[in-house]
Image (cartoon, rainbow, N blue to C red; front, side):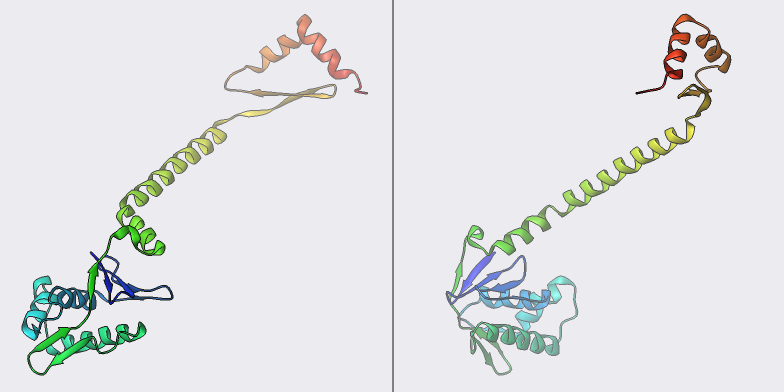
Length: 198
């Protein structure tokens, strides 16, 4: 979910970011959960016990007043970055009230950098799979090429004039090469190799 706080700060719940046109502040997971709980109870008191349950206990974490106080402080500090001071009221020994206009916004209107983060995070498994598959294909092709290159038995058999004759001993027997150069075609080729190029 995404919200516009007091018409000036964009809060993205998924990315845990507070953003305006000039800066972005990323919240910790606990601080983001705390802000979500305060937004849900906006302009009404939410007890310390309820916050401890929603932010920590429901997620299998140990809740404490110190954690709550520290994250309230972190949230207030983040709000100060955007001139949203005095938005969180402390009700001594009872709880807190968020005094802020929280308007749900369409994700399409979010900051371009946040859109890219969201696309990347939603397709993270696709990217990892693509990279892994590409690596495997390249490794397979590389192994095939190296094996093929190592299995090649091409070597220089002899020189005929200015030409060099190469053969693969796995394919052609050397006596067949000599027989070829005794044929009419072989003699023509040999004659061409003995002529100087101009």
